Image (cartoon, rainbow, N blue to C red):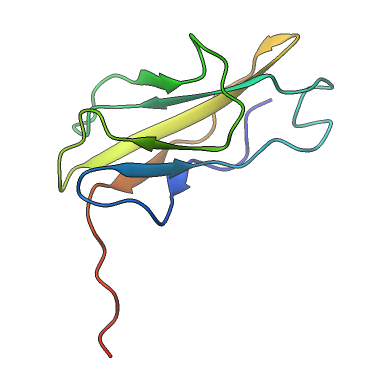
Length: 109
């Protein structure tokens, strides 16, 4: 089963790094009846290119966020997706989320 929600930007995102977050799969149905032993997060190149692994496929990863610092260019919008692994194998990918590599200014006082 695919995750319902796309990855999203966390508060640490700026022009140099992406604070990528996603939801844990907590219900039995979401987990396919087993416990999650890894989440894989994939990202594109900010130009609509192919997805590549950030974490989770080659080395299991059980958190629901990661700071992506490698290859980030200010002003580009990156596409991200994730999926989960349990004893039955890898599930389907989440919807694709986007994160803009930029510092979002605060509202004026």
